[in-house]
Image 1 (cartoon, rainbow, N blue to C red):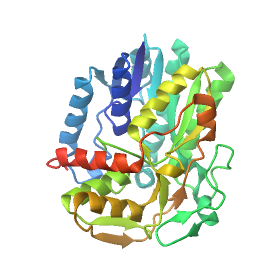
Image 2: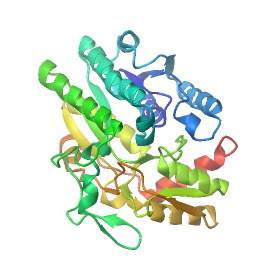
Image 3: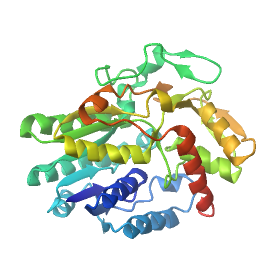
Image 4: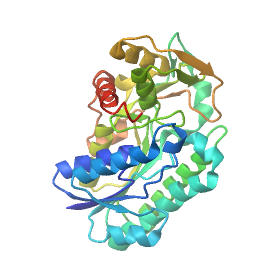
Length: 340
């Protein structure tokens, strides 16, 4: 079996590559090697890109430097593949404000190109959306305690209304991704999985203030740097470990199903920013200095996935709890701390 992983040298893409190589699949990795998101972190973006490329090559991945915004490139690399997993993304709301054209090209046009390649060869495809498509109106239904926000009604399912509240270009591009995914299911009878992913974390995530908050906090905790929180620190997510997300794409391929799935760590993996910092402080053995700034436009204050549809239809559930996952990411940061 052979899979094309688009965005192979990104955080999630690298874990998807690793998962499928361990299964014995041939993996073609496609990545444009952009430093756009990394340039905003203050880290050595070129060194990180080299590190990520070497990581996937060492796994045995056939890495090709091409861009998802090129239909001919995606179509050529998909030739002979049995499956496409598109992990390429512009994931940050703040970067979508600053450059909505790039946001659209990567998230919407890149999706369309990937779908066309899958249609050309009549193979399944997995697409990565985001929980942010539900919109910030979710913030209106929350209660708060000392350390976190909560929603009395419980986790969010696919049936919950989306795009409610003030939206940003990121909401628009990711919802466009979902609409095109559904269109290819309905029109061409293709196997398309659309995954609304919650906050992910794990090794090989070079997170910054724009995106990848768990890794950003872990890096700053290990390095003894100040952490900046936008808001009051009660913002809450059901964090999803990268290997669990990678395993999900295998489950989808084996299912012969199509559809939309909201994916997160669920209730057992739920924590607030403040709670995460407290755990990291214990792991690194020192108090972490925190600075608070004004909340950012469009952000969700709370999200927890119900995970009922994915459990029923794909037989998937998260396995890595935050206690294990945070230990793993701190250990990894220690191993690359000269780079960060």
